[in-house]
Amino acid sequence: MFLAVIAITLRKSILDPQGSMIAKSLRNLDFRVEDTRAGKHLELTFRASDENHARELLQEMCAKLLVNSVTEEYRIISLNAYED
Image 1 (spheres, rainbow, N blue to C red):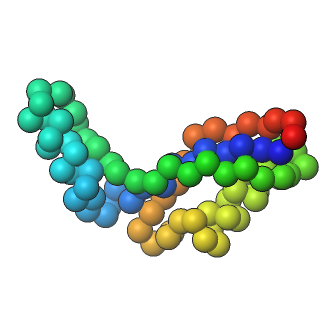
Image 2: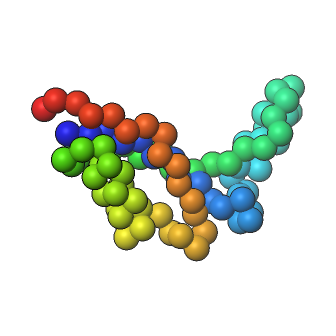
């Protein structure tokens, strides 16, 4: 079994009003924030034969369903194997 954590955000070229509002609010509270991007955090548990296969499956999941490749991008934050 594998546990994957991925972050999905709007591409840098796409305006992110939610992220902009968060950054503005943090600045109003005297935090020095350069930029903020809002997005989705997903945790997926699935079976794969090894780490390479798990990465391939994750990329396929993102391409087919999880990520709108026109407006979004994703990062694999972590990918860990564990015993059932």
